[in-house]
Image 1: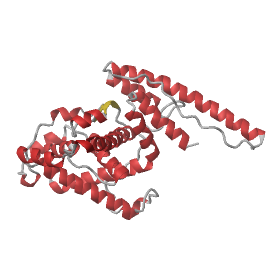
Image 2 (image 1 turned 90 degrees about the vertical axis):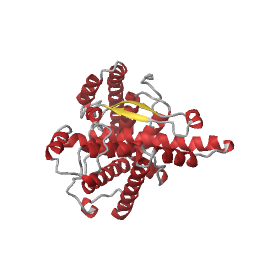
Image 3 (image 1 turned 60 degrees about the vertical axis):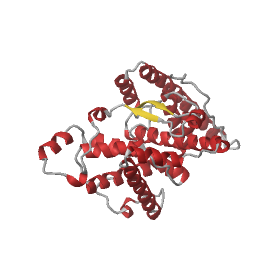
Image 4 (image 1 turned 120 degrees about the horizontal axis):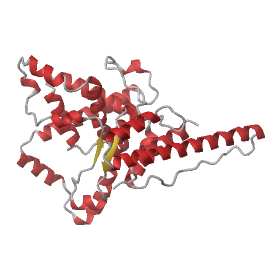
Length: 329
């Protein structure tokens, strides 16, 4: 169900009351112009919500692209500058977000989580069920507290997906965050964010080909590679890791057991990536998702609040843009 787009928006009072009259006048003119642009943006995003509600995803995406870089438009959509794949040492990136040592450690931790999730997924079904049962807290007196914690993790996880997708230019068209009640009933109740532009996923079968046991099937490699552009694959990798990365940034750890990682593994095997090449691509994507979610940290937190309230996609987008407007004043 799509919620009405209009929701309470934060207002920021002018603080320099003692400033000279000309300065106050300029500030008021700017504030009014900014408010007018916000009104135009919200009006346009209501149209986006309307198209999404009807399932007209291409029309919604077209509207969003028309708003890029225009007054009252969208400054955040597709605004991310991705780290070049040729970069090996982080020292050359000149980033002020975190010192490179801390960033390297975070990337290392994320890569370990990815490998653990892939190993868990490779267990046979009976072992997987047993492992999940052992991880569930069966004490009913603690079930509510555990569900509240899981709910917060889910919110941050899905907000990570949503924001990374938006920043790399992939439009979210629907999302779901499980409620606390859902998680009390089922600790593993799923959440998700769905995006326009990843149509190739329909063609990805449940491949069981091991990257370690590749033969010289050059034609098959070429056929599968041609099904996905480099740009689409890069976006997909960053977006899919956005949830895991957000968990690390907010909580310092991940719950593992990510279907996202299983999906990544299937896609890379479907494309016949060798294990070392797959690791390089995943590491690059993890680094980019980290840089984006750190750089847009305030927007991520505001977006998580909007998603926890079940706001529409258009309202969530406006939450991002309103935050960016405020930070750029």
